[in-house]
Amino acid sequence: MRVHVVGTGLIGTSLGLALTRHGDEVTLEDAVPTHAALARDLGAGRLPGEGETLDPQLVVVAAPPDVTAGCVATALERWPSAAVTDVASVKGAVLARLRAADADLGRYCGSHPMAGRERSGAVSGRHDLFDGRAWVLTPTAETRPQARELVADVARAAGAAVLELPPEGHDRAVAVVSHVPQLAASLVAARLETLDEDAVALAGQGLRDVTRIAASDPHLWTQILAGNAPAVREVLAGLAEDLDRLLEALAALADGGDAPGARGALAGVIAAGNLGQARIPGKHGAAPTSLETVRVLLPDEPGQLGRLFADIGAIGVNVEEFHLDHGLGQQLGLAEVEVLPAAAAGLAQALGERGWRIHG
Ligand SMILES: NC(=O)c1ccc[n+]([C@@H]2O[C@H](COP(=O)([O-])OP(=O)(O)OC[C@H]3O[C@@H](n4cnc5c(N)ncnc54)[C@H](O)[C@@H]3O)[C@@H](O)[C@H]2O)c1
Image (tube, rainbow, N blue to C red; front, side, top):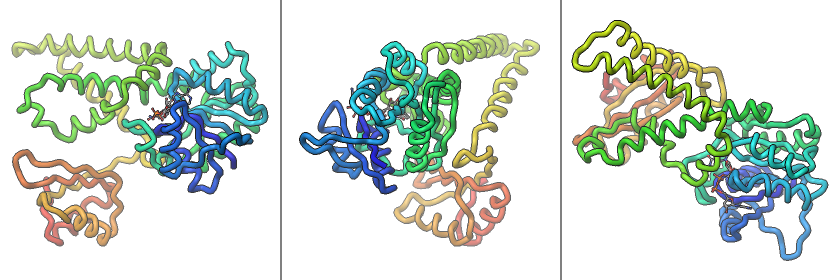
């Protein structure tokens, strides 16, 4: 396939790397020429030659959301026989601008790879970024089947699994699964800014899990949130109601009070969270899987993690998730090895027999 990528940051470069590995012909372009040159140097494709006329089958616009519609409209005009997609995290706003510009929507099929990182730029690109991740196509009634098929082929070639949603359905879904989680992570992490050093030092895996994406780029996220303002606002309004109920319950329990219903309200919040969390799909979009954690204490020394993984491999257990925490003020690490429930007891016993200290 001949694919032209416009915007060679994290997503454009990752796509170029994945398609080049797949054997496709990728050309690269960016408003900042050095960004495209860097993506080329990293192996994401080639730059068009001086005066070369490109003839791509598909153009992928991977530029920031605010300029995406303009880049798509330009690409539709520049390459009258190519299909065009974009990867912006919001779909309704891009489509509305294209409609207003009277663009040829038959050759356009919007899309959104549900993969990313909290870092931007070509240097953060990874060839396996899309492996096993969903790539949502948002065709409209105007989209011709050929355009839709080309975008699906490219998404699959990059390693992703293809899903389809209408643009508005996509925007409502990502408000809940991506945009509000970003805001929640940022709001929680912002509480740490003025916290005493001693208090921050108590941070454990829970805080790291909840705030990992708070390291995201404010410029990109301002565009994403503004582009999906109605759907994000609706989810946040629901959260605000829940927060109000929580505040009422906590107020009723303050000063040792025991107002009827207040403890139930607290338990209700955690229990509802349990139910929601259990619905998050497992690896590669599979059905949700409950995992069990085997905790292993390991000396904070070179080579220990390698030895632990080698032993787990020799025992024949697949690691589903892994976290490493460091004991405060101790030369010890706490490795949390998450495995399928049926494997947990056997793994803990076999690791114990090999001399590892199993915790809890
Ligand atoms: N970062 C993520 O996790 C993620 C995930 C899925 C989708 N997306 C979407 O992918 C798109 C790109 O995001 P990113 O994280 O790769 O951003 P990025 O900042 O890493 O890269 C954006 C690139 O676009 C270039 N650019 C800016 N204006 C341009 C223009 N007018 N024409 C050509 N190139 C232009 C920039 O120079 C930069 O190299 C965004 O629309 C974003 O919503 C991002």
